Image (cartoon, rainbow, N blue to C red; front, side, top):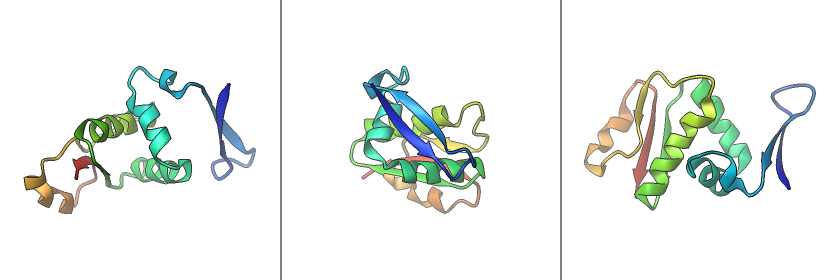
Length: 111
């Protein structure tokens, strides 16, 4: 069994990504599977496009462990590229002012 994501906007050949099921076997970390099951793939592609052009991404969630794993999974999905700017997997609420930073970031916050 496979989960197929079509990527028509990236190439004229209608490229696709085939992910073996169950999704928990995709990566050693369960963050990638958590990301795929909680975010629509169109929104995930927009998020990855933003990261490639070095835009800031704020990941919000209810549980700190899920937020942390999803922010780390974004870094895994960027490979072979590496994120060269600020990466804070879980930002404490008293440091909320950091999201006004002019530099690009990947930040996770539990609400």
